[in-house]
Amino acid sequence: MIVAETKPLDEIWRSIAPYSRVLILGCGTCMTVCGAGGEREVSFLADALRMSQARGGEHDHSLLEYTVKRQCDAEFLETFVDRSREVDAILSLGCGVGVQVVADRFPDLPVLPGNNTYFMGASSEWGVWDERCAACGDCRLADTAGVCPITRCTKGILNGPCAGAKNGKCEANKEADCAWILIYQRLERLGQLDKMRRYYPPRNFRVIPRPRRIVNKTQVSTGGNDGQVSV
Amino acid sequence: MAKSLFDEKLADAKFLVTTEVGPPKGTDISEMLHNIDLLKDKVDAINVTDGQSSVMRLASLAGCLIVKERGGEPILQVTCRDRNRLALQADLLFASVRGIANVLCLTGDSVDVGDHKEAKPVFDLDSVQLLKAIRIMEGGKDLGGNDLKGAVQFCAGASVHPAADFIEPQLIKFEKKVAAGAQFFQTQGIYDVGSLRRFMQYASQFPVKILAGIIVLASARMARYMNENVPGVIVPQATIDELATAEKGKGLQKGMEIAARAIRSIKAGGLCHGVHIMAVGNERLVPEILEAAGLT
Image (cartoon, rainbow over all chains, first blue to last red; front, top):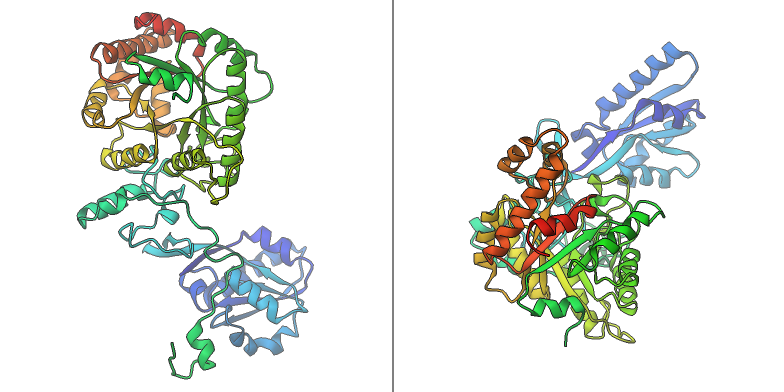
């Protein structure tokens, strides 16, 4: 799940200020689940902008609302092509991927981000999200008992803890558990401490050079999702 | 053959004393020069810190050059916080060609505890990988597998935390540092000599020299502040209570007494191979502490 937060209202005002007709575009997938840009948040944001506009009197914008199933797939963007002709800009409440796919589909319109995209994570309790994957392209969770040191250790180090933890918490964030203590505890429970004793060489940051691209060979060789699987 | 004067001393049975100086934030090096001149003949080597607590300061390389110029034996502290593997190797080459022959390999504090919290943390290597990098470079190669025109040679050390509140993973890492080529260790601050004794019962099986870290505290308030804010520092309540018994304005005096007492008991008990005194801003008082500890 990609997790984001809506930008502060004054920053959104500054970015939409030059455009009188703005389409606020929601996303029905991750942004709906994390509460940063689903149909409900599109409506909340539009109301908040209208209220502050009515109060302040300095803006005179017309705001349209629309939410697609997924902004990161161009095919879902066709449903509002007609409406896009009635606006001067699109304010996307998608993640950073969504904003770019929308921009690519509408080359003649400014597409503005309404969210700050933070991380890939999981919900630990209602409304609380924790980062769990850094998309490093070289998953080592088998060696670290299912606890990611790249993501959950503030330094992302591979050969064990630094000396900064106190009471099991990270030196950079007293709320966060030291990832390496968690890794130690899980490996010990699994009888796999030999995995921690092993030397891990420096990371390969070239696993997939940026910008990264994945070609799914199955889909390419069969020409699409026609149920055929070839290896 | 010994790789440095300090390396030579590590081979002796003599009780070793090292201390550290923190380079200034700015170009006024007068205080650092004063401290180096004061300390260089009283200790076996002087560490120069590398942006300690992630506070931006003059580079440790510059400080080490100055220690050398003044006739002292420098230990270059190198953290992985600010430089990727290209820059770290470049700095090691720099140290090597200028005769800086001792390196302390550290992961480095988190950027979040320092004075440039918005900076990009690097940590391309960790302390174990940095030690390994030194040994690879000694073999005439860089980390990319390319030949070096002239190899490096370093007496390399690392850090360990005998008083960590969760010790087992620290010990695993300690062993990895030994395997990666650490010859000496300067520990995080020790207050409870018992924790050092327990650690040494385990660590004495390894062919490395251990120098116990002694942090000179200036007051109970400072101790509490460090417990709260300085990574790796764990001052036990008994030490804080003792500092609190000092009369107003005499906290530092009490802190020096505590430090001298710890050094005496470490040396008398033959617990480890030496001490590393961290006076955090009170370097000028290190000679007095040495005297009080009976080390002069």
